[in-house]
Image (tube, rainbow, N blue to C red; front, top):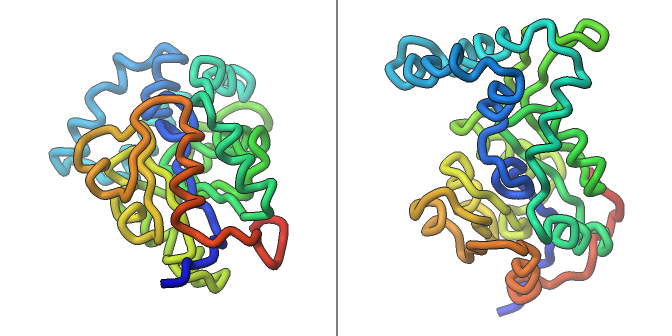
Length: 227
């Protein structure tokens, strides 16, 4: 059976390319408000608040913080060993790399620039100038990640069998299952690992390249560039 051509790589960011799994909690800790915010996940799980309300309440704790102070949190959330080489393998072959993240765009946009990825679709923290307003525009959460993926594939006319997905969390499970090749990177639990065709349990994570090479026909993207 002929191999499918590889046309797109989709990455989760936090826990996959960066080591910290939850950038929301990480930012709370960085800004010293983790104790005040700790009851919000409990309220969401009980159904007392919606996901969007939870996100807004989280963001409200960051109101008044400067953009610089917030971005400093990335200093303690390094890239995983091998992340640059993994993404670079695709970009050097003109295979577009995109991200779908339930994290924060203020971090993910930096990661995308560092790794020369295309767009990362994530949640957009709002600012008045360089000061956080305490508002957030929610684009992605764990329950709609696969919908975001479907919209991307439809927009660019790509079949799911021509896509590799890299993820680590439960929200990535539908994407890992749907893609032609799903690779769990340092999976958060056994369910995530079981949902993927392959798993990389430790760094450096660029050993995942061999799974891609064995699964797809890699000719590079005929259109070139990224999305």
